Image (cartoon, rainbow, N blue to C red):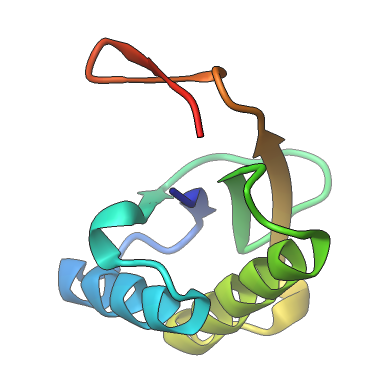
Length: 111
């Protein structure tokens, strides 16, 4: 399950846009919408180097390195297109998660 926590400077993002982004991202990476978690956190404060969007992307280690790059690029494309931003205004940092390092519904998840 890809999980993307996106810290977005803009505050006026409609929920319908978020749904559209999840649907498009799922189609591009071959993952069902129900297996994607896309969070937009708006109105945060930054100091130092500033970005319009900062993303913490969490992926299970099921994917090959090229697949991870494709997932990152597709998320970048969707965010820049949907939010009308330049790619250089978006920072994505990806963490690859090993089996057993996730809990869901009170259970340790392995794959």
